[in-house]
Each structure stands twice: as structure tokens, then as C-alpha cells.
Length: 481
Ligand code: F0G
Image 1: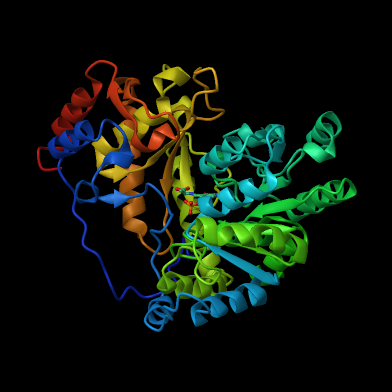
Image 2 (image 1 turned 180 degrees about the horizontal axis):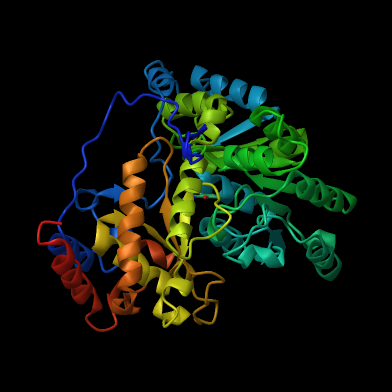
């Protein structure tokens, strides 16, 4: 919920009480420099003990509710026929209106199963935008990911409410050029992660479904951030202001053939699933489940997490849960824009994103501006963010580096974890960095894994800028900060 103060300022309001806390600490700049060097300038390789605010991701890091924790205490650990599974199935039937649930240990496991069943060598998979693990699985199966976003999608300073829409002309072209039989399915990602958590509209999904159905092509929705996408439809799409999050999610589900998700995001637990109402599709996917994930009633998850997701699915349609991250992100973005910092607009779900190309215009893509800025943010604040740019792109089949469309630093806002003073702290340190951006240089790889290199790759600064930045910070704020 957002509250309007008497001076007109709108603030996100926490509609919950904090009863359990985890201690955190803020290591001083000299310690942060040591930690960053040990981590190879890759925020994934930092240890939590060296991190003040963990804004790497909202995946599996959300605050769980009392009801989720309570449900975990009564899980049924039966290998087969677990009652926990039937609670999940009932929740998905009630909330999504879908008949069958195939549990999987997390989102990428669902992608693996879908790739195995539907993506054949030579196929294409058109989508509004790829996610890293999505692309990896579909390409490992021999398919090619085609991103058919609208022109506005890559404009980081925009007022377009639905930058996650598919360009319908491009969809027609793909079907025409490749033939419908070579299209595995059309994938719609709810609040497209890598372009700044940007939603699609129901009008667009409806049009996509019509075109796909005309050619006998399936529509698959990646629903990892579904409650946020529904929240934006309610806030931004004409005709939906009075509709509940639940009914909007139902409408989305009515327009897709398969939905899958990472339960680590909107559902605030650690797992995932695939759901469908179609008997034929269920029958094709299900046999592979015990091969890769586990028996039909746990799918590689602990049954405690199955219980937690079952509750999470029901809770995510509560407007105070659906808006918990989005409203803080909106505030965060608004504050950065007020300070003249190039944050991605409009505000999306999951995170506040900063455009590193605009922040560091002197660096080219292969000097990894988003990677450099992400490291610099940590040095100046102890905040761990995630690079979403060229470091996150793997090389092509000829070993050539691919420049990312966007160079973003993602400040994820896990649901119900951080407070207003944390956001204000982040805004202040980003402002300091912006004033000192001339000190930030590029990075180069010194160890580069062959796939999903951003997870484990190690980098080094070009020159000595990390040390100089930490020094500048110490001289402005003192040795203890
Ligand atoms: N799809 C989307 C849209 C995602 O954001 C993610 C994960 C996945 C699929 C894969 O799910 O991690 O459960 O295997 N996103 C995380 C992130 C990793 O930090 O944005 P998973």
C-alpha cells in the first residue's frame, strides 16, 4: 500500500510487523576493498558476512510470512503421495485456475523440462525477452531464442507502461519466416527481468494468444514475477483499476497453454513448478519429472518448501504482498530520478535498475560498465547488486563476445526485507558515486567459465581504480565508514 502524507508526498507503507530479524553489519571501505578483490570484482563471489544490504536478487531472499513458516512445520515427507503436494495443487487450482501441477526444484528446472519436451534442434523460441537460464536451456536443446520486443523496451528513460510487450508484427514475421512447425512456443515473461522488471499488458497477451492460436502454436508464460505483472496491469492498464490481482492472474492464465515459475520470487519460497490445464501437454511433460527432478509429488523440492509455496501462491494475490516490492522500487526510482541519476523508468517489479551506460559513458560494452558500476557500488556502500549487462551474456558459438542490449545494475528489493532508511542510504551512496564517477574504470576477465559466466567468472579492474575509489570514499567519510 502507498500512503499520501499531508505534504502530498506518497510513501510506500509496510503492511506487516517485523517480529523476527537477522543481524547485518557494515564493513568499512578498507574491508570492502579486500572483499571485492577476493571476490574477483564479481558480486556473486562475495560472502554474506561482507555485505551490508543484499540487493543481489529477490530470488529466495524474501521475508516469509508467519503462515508460510507455520505450514513448513506440518509438511508431509512421504516420498510418494505427499499431502504437501496436494495442498500446492489445490492452491494452484484456486489461484491460477489450472488443473495440473508439475513441481520442480526451481525455475530453471522447469525450463529444462520444457526445453526437453518442446524445443527441437533448429527450432526458434520467440519471446518478449530472454532470461539467462532460459536462454541457456533452450539453446542447449538446439533452439534459438528470438527476442521480439517493441522499440520502447530498450529505452531506459521512458514513460511506456508496458515495455514487456511483444511486437506483434515481429511475431507475424517469425511465424512467416520460420513456419509455425519450427516455433517451439511463444514465451511471455511476466515483468521481464533483464530489461528492468517491465510488465506486459493483457491486451498484448490477448493479441499474442490469438496469433499463436491461429497457427497452432503454444503460449508459455514465465510467471516467476506474476503478481507484480498483475499489480502493474491493475495500476496501469485501462479498465483494470477495479479488478483484483487474483482475477487478473486468472485472466493471464486463461490466455496461456502452460505456465511455469520460479517460486523464489512472487511466491517467497524456494522451488518452482509447471502448470497447465491441458491433458495432452501434462502427459508429455510428466514422464520426464522423475528422471530429472524427483517423484511427481515433490519434484526435487523439500516438502517444507512445497508447503511454503502453497501458502505463497495464495498470499501473493493479496495487494499488500503483490505491491510490497513494486512500491518500494517505485520510491527508490523516484528518489534517484530526483537526484539526476539515470535509473530505468518507469519503475518495474523486483528491482531498481541503474543504466550503467549513461552513468559511465566513457566505457564500452567490453569494458563491462554494469560490472564495474556494480563493483563500485559495493566499494562505496557495502550494498551487493547484480550486473545485468555484457558480463551476463555468454559468448556465441564462435567464441565471440556479445554486447548486451542494456548495461544495467540491479538493486533488487526483496519483498518485505528492507526499510525506508536502507533505501535512503542506497540513494545517498549512489549520489556520491555519481559525483565521483570519473574515478570508475572498466574490468577485464581473468577467469571465464564457458557457460553462464557471470556466476563464477573472476575479473580485475583496468588500472587501479578500485583502490583509488575506496581511498576517495575514506577521505570523504572517514576510516570507519
Ligand atoms: N525466469 C525468470 C523470469 C527469472 O527471473 C528466473 C530467476 C528464472 C526464470 C529462473 O528461476 O532461479 O528459480 O531457477 N531469476 C533469479 C534472479 C535468479 O536473480 O533474477 P530459478
